[in-house]
Figure 1 (cartoon, rainbow, N blue to C red):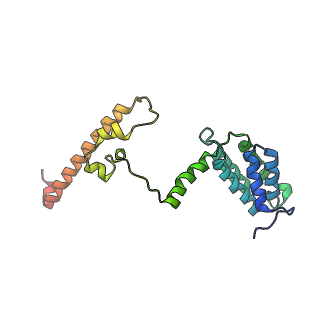
Figure 2 (figure 1 turned 90 degrees about the vertical axis):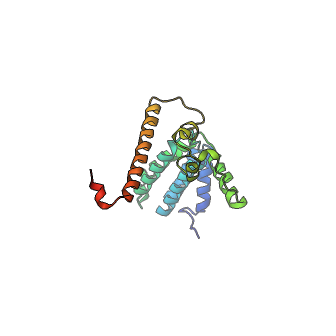
Amino acid sequence: MIPNTVNGLPAMACVSALQKCIRRGLEREAMQFAVELIHTSKPFTSMVCKRLQVISHEDIDTISQPHVVPFVKAACEQAIAWYDSDVAKLGKTRMAVGNAIRMMARAAKSREGDHFQAAVGWAAILEGAVPVIPDWANDQHTLQGRRLGRGLQHFREVSTLLVPPAPKDAYEDDAYRLWALRQQGKQYDKLNLEGASKSKPGDLFSE
Protein backbone atom coordinates (compact mmCIF):
# COMPACT_ATOMS: atom_id res chain seq x y z
CA MET A 1 0.00 0.00 0.00
CA ILE A 2 1.32 3.43 -0.93
CA PRO A 3 1.72 5.60 2.20
CA ASN A 4 0.26 9.08 2.53
CA THR A 5 2.30 12.24 2.09
CA VAL A 6 4.04 14.12 4.87
CA ASN A 7 0.82 16.02 5.54
CA GLY A 8 -1.44 12.98 5.32
CA LEU A 9 -2.71 13.41 1.75
CA PRO A 10 -3.20 10.35 -0.46
CA ALA A 11 -0.13 10.22 -2.68
CA MET A 12 -1.80 9.04 -5.87
CA ALA A 13 -4.50 11.67 -5.54
CA CYS A 14 -1.72 14.27 -5.37
CA VAL A 15 -0.11 12.85 -8.52
CA SER A 16 -3.49 12.92 -10.26
CA ALA A 17 -4.14 16.48 -9.15
CA LEU A 18 -0.68 17.50 -10.35
CA GLN A 19 -1.45 16.27 -13.85
CA LYS A 20 -4.94 17.78 -14.00
CA CYS A 21 -3.59 21.14 -12.86
CA ILE A 22 -0.98 21.12 -15.63
CA ARG A 23 -3.71 20.26 -18.14
CA ARG A 24 -5.68 23.29 -16.95
CA GLY A 25 -2.68 25.63 -16.92
CA LEU A 26 -2.73 25.94 -13.10
CA GLU A 27 1.02 26.04 -12.55
CA ARG A 28 1.04 27.22 -8.92
CA GLU A 29 -1.46 24.58 -7.85
CA ALA A 30 0.46 21.90 -9.77
CA MET A 31 3.66 22.96 -8.02
CA GLN A 32 1.96 22.76 -4.63
CA PHE A 33 1.08 19.11 -5.20
CA ALA A 34 4.57 18.42 -6.50
CA VAL A 35 6.14 20.01 -3.42
CA GLU A 36 3.86 17.99 -1.13
CA LEU A 37 5.24 14.83 -2.70
CA ILE A 38 8.86 16.00 -2.96
CA HIS A 39 8.96 16.98 0.71
CA THR A 40 7.68 13.53 1.69
CA SER A 41 10.45 11.32 0.29
CA LYS A 42 12.83 10.60 -2.56
CA PRO A 43 10.61 7.77 -3.90
CA PHE A 44 7.72 10.24 -4.11
CA THR A 45 10.02 12.71 -5.87
CA SER A 46 10.80 9.97 -8.36
CA MET A 47 7.06 9.42 -8.76
CA VAL A 48 6.59 13.10 -9.56
CA CYS A 49 9.38 13.04 -12.14
CA LYS A 50 8.06 9.93 -13.85
CA ARG A 51 4.61 11.45 -14.13
CA LEU A 52 5.96 14.75 -15.48
CA GLN A 53 7.71 12.86 -18.27
CA VAL A 54 4.50 11.02 -19.12
CA ILE A 55 2.60 14.32 -19.16
CA SER A 56 5.11 15.76 -21.66
CA HIS A 57 3.91 13.14 -24.14
CA GLU A 58 0.32 12.65 -23.01
CA ASP A 59 -0.99 16.21 -22.69
CA ILE A 60 1.34 18.47 -24.67
CA ASP A 61 1.29 19.26 -28.39
CA THR A 62 4.66 17.66 -29.06
CA ILE A 63 4.35 18.14 -32.82
CA SER A 64 4.52 21.93 -32.52
CA GLN A 65 6.73 21.92 -29.38
CA PRO A 66 9.12 18.94 -29.57
CA HIS A 67 11.60 20.70 -27.28
CA VAL A 68 9.30 20.12 -24.29
CA VAL A 69 10.00 16.39 -24.07
CA PRO A 70 13.83 16.54 -23.75
CA PHE A 71 13.62 19.59 -21.47
CA VAL A 72 11.28 17.84 -19.05
CA LYS A 73 13.42 14.68 -19.13
CA ALA A 74 16.57 16.65 -18.34
CA ALA A 75 14.88 18.65 -15.58
CA CYS A 76 13.55 15.47 -13.95
CA GLU A 77 16.94 13.77 -14.09
CA GLN A 78 18.49 16.81 -12.43
CA ALA A 79 15.77 16.93 -9.80
CA ILE A 80 16.56 13.36 -8.75
CA ALA A 81 20.33 13.93 -8.85
CA TRP A 82 20.00 17.04 -6.65
CA TYR A 83 17.62 15.48 -4.12
CA ASP A 84 18.47 15.93 -0.44
CA SER A 85 16.68 14.43 2.54
CA ASP A 86 16.79 17.87 4.21
CA VAL A 87 13.81 19.82 2.84
CA ALA A 88 15.71 23.06 3.44
CA LYS A 89 18.22 21.87 0.84
CA LEU A 90 15.67 20.84 -1.78
CA GLY A 91 15.65 24.18 -3.58
CA LYS A 92 17.45 22.91 -6.68
CA THR A 93 15.15 19.88 -6.94
CA ARG A 94 12.06 22.08 -6.59
CA MET A 95 13.48 24.50 -9.16
CA ALA A 96 14.02 21.77 -11.78
CA VAL A 97 10.56 20.32 -11.18
CA GLY A 98 9.02 23.79 -11.16
CA ASN A 99 10.59 24.69 -14.48
CA ALA A 100 9.18 21.54 -16.04
CA ILE A 101 5.75 22.29 -14.58
CA ARG A 102 5.76 25.92 -15.77
CA MET A 103 6.83 24.95 -19.26
CA MET A 104 4.07 22.37 -19.62
CA ALA A 105 1.36 24.41 -17.90
CA ARG A 106 1.98 27.25 -20.37
CA ALA A 107 2.47 25.03 -23.42
CA ALA A 108 -0.09 24.31 -26.13
CA LYS A 109 -1.96 21.18 -25.12
CA SER A 110 -3.02 18.12 -27.10
CA ARG A 111 -4.38 14.70 -26.18
CA GLU A 112 -3.72 13.32 -29.66
CA GLY A 113 -0.59 11.38 -28.67
CA ASP A 114 -2.51 9.33 -26.10
CA HIS A 115 -5.48 8.88 -28.42
CA PHE A 116 -3.15 7.75 -31.22
CA GLN A 117 -1.44 5.03 -29.18
CA ALA A 118 -4.80 3.79 -27.88
CA ALA A 119 -6.51 3.76 -31.28
CA VAL A 120 -3.75 1.66 -32.85
CA GLY A 121 -2.46 -0.33 -29.88
CA TRP A 122 -5.80 -1.42 -28.44
CA ALA A 123 -7.12 -2.28 -31.89
CA ALA A 124 -4.27 -4.78 -32.13
CA ILE A 125 -4.84 -6.15 -28.62
CA LEU A 126 -8.65 -6.28 -28.51
CA GLU A 127 -9.62 -6.67 -32.15
CA GLY A 128 -6.62 -8.53 -33.56
CA ALA A 129 -5.85 -5.78 -36.07
CA VAL A 130 -2.87 -6.72 -38.26
CA PRO A 131 -1.22 -4.29 -40.69
CA VAL A 132 -1.26 -5.06 -44.42
CA ILE A 133 2.04 -4.60 -46.24
CA PRO A 134 1.38 -2.30 -49.22
CA ASP A 135 2.85 -3.15 -52.59
CA TRP A 136 4.96 0.02 -52.62
CA ALA A 137 6.81 -1.19 -49.51
CA ASN A 138 8.29 -4.11 -51.46
CA ASP A 139 11.39 -2.63 -53.05
CA GLN A 140 15.01 -3.73 -53.48
CA HIS A 141 15.41 -3.91 -49.70
CA THR A 142 12.84 -6.71 -49.29
CA LEU A 143 12.83 -10.32 -50.51
CA GLN A 144 9.54 -9.84 -52.36
CA GLY A 145 10.82 -6.67 -54.03
CA ARG A 146 13.94 -8.46 -55.27
CA ARG A 147 11.80 -11.32 -56.57
CA LEU A 148 9.82 -8.73 -58.54
CA GLY A 149 13.04 -7.34 -59.99
CA ARG A 150 12.61 -3.94 -58.40
CA GLY A 151 15.83 -1.98 -58.37
CA LEU A 152 17.18 1.50 -57.95
CA GLN A 153 14.80 3.14 -60.44
CA HIS A 154 11.75 1.74 -58.61
CA PHE A 155 13.26 2.92 -55.33
CA ARG A 156 13.68 6.44 -56.72
CA GLU A 157 10.26 6.70 -58.33
CA VAL A 158 8.11 4.80 -55.83
CA SER A 159 9.80 3.97 -52.54
CA THR A 160 11.09 7.46 -51.75
CA LEU A 161 7.77 9.22 -52.35
CA LEU A 162 7.34 11.95 -49.73
CA VAL A 163 4.02 13.37 -48.50
CA PRO A 164 3.86 16.31 -48.45
CA PRO A 165 6.28 16.42 -51.37
CA ALA A 166 9.69 18.01 -50.96
CA PRO A 167 11.55 19.91 -53.69
CA LYS A 168 14.39 18.10 -55.42
CA ASP A 169 17.62 18.79 -53.58
CA ALA A 170 21.05 19.59 -54.97
CA TYR A 171 22.50 16.15 -54.19
CA GLU A 172 19.81 13.78 -55.50
CA ASP A 173 21.28 13.09 -58.95
CA ASP A 174 24.78 12.49 -57.58
CA ALA A 175 23.41 10.20 -54.89
CA TYR A 176 21.59 7.97 -57.40
CA ARG A 177 24.51 8.00 -59.82
CA LEU A 178 26.84 6.78 -57.06
CA TRP A 179 24.34 4.25 -55.71
CA ALA A 180 24.12 2.81 -59.23
CA LEU A 181 27.92 2.56 -59.40
CA ARG A 182 27.94 0.90 -56.01
CA GLN A 183 25.40 -1.68 -57.18
CA GLN A 184 27.46 -2.37 -60.29
CA GLY A 185 30.50 -2.90 -58.08
CA LYS A 186 28.59 -5.36 -55.90
CA GLN A 187 27.51 -7.33 -58.97
CA TYR A 188 31.11 -7.37 -60.21
CA ASP A 189 32.35 -8.59 -56.82
CA LYS A 190 29.67 -11.29 -56.80
CA LEU A 191 30.76 -12.56 -60.23
CA ASN A 192 34.39 -12.61 -59.09
CA LEU A 193 33.52 -14.55 -55.96
CA GLU A 194 31.45 -17.05 -57.91
CA GLY A 195 34.30 -17.50 -60.35
CA ALA A 196 36.78 -17.90 -57.53
CA SER A 197 34.69 -20.59 -55.88
CA LYS A 198 34.92 -22.66 -59.09
CA SER A 199 38.68 -22.22 -59.43
CA LYS A 200 41.50 -24.26 -57.99
CA PRO A 201 43.48 -22.66 -55.14
CA GLY A 202 46.42 -21.96 -57.44
CA ASP A 203 44.24 -20.19 -59.99
CA LEU A 204 43.60 -17.32 -57.59
CA PHE A 205 47.20 -16.24 -57.95
CA SER A 206 47.59 -16.75 -61.68
CA GLU A 207 48.09 -13.83 -64.06
